[in-house]
Length: 253
Image (cartoon, rainbow, N blue to C red; front, side, top):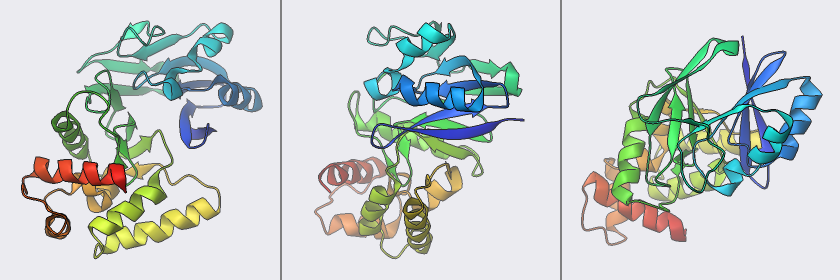
C-alpha cells in the first residue's frame, strides 16, 4: 500500500511524495527544505526522484537531496538538467518496487521540449502541461505540440487521478467560466475548489474525466466555447485554432 501526499513549496508548487510507512519517492522537488522536513516528520527514507521537466521550480532541490540521499534521478536528459542519471524516453517504464507500482513514460512537449509525464491507468504526474481546469504556457516548441500533448493525456482512462505541479485551479476556473459560463459541471467545480482552498486544502488530484468535462483546453470542440471565441474575433474554429485562441486569451486574462 502507498499514499500520495502533496508537499507545498514556494507560492503554489506541489512536490508529490509517493510513500508508505518507511520509504518515499518524490516528484519534481524544486525545493529540498520542505521535502527533508516531510521525510523527517514521517520517518521516511528517500528512494528516488522523478522529474517531469527542467524548470528550476521542479529541479532546484535535487542537488541538496542527493547530498543527503544518494538516489537515482529519473527524467528526460537535457543539458540544463544535469541531475538525470536515468534517461527516459517515450515508451519507457519506471518500476517502483517498494510500492509495486509502475509508470509508463509519455513525451509531452509544448511547455518545454524535455517535458515527460508518468502515468498508469490510475495515476498521472503531468508537471506543467495539464493543470486543474487549465494548461501550461507554451515556452518551447509550438502550440500545436502542446495541443497534441493535451489530447494524448485526455485519452487516458477517466478515473485516472491527475497530479499537477501547481495550485492554479481556482484562477483557471475563473477563465474557464468566461469561456463556457453555462457548463454546470464547471459551476459545481468552482464551488468545490473554492471550498477546498478556504480550508487550505489542495484542489488536486483532479481526474481525467473531470478535466474533460471542465477544462476548456480539452474542450476545443464545444459550441459554447467556440461561440465565446467568435465574439472575440475567432476566425479558425478548428480544434487547433480554438486552442491557440484560448491559450492567447489566457495569457492576457
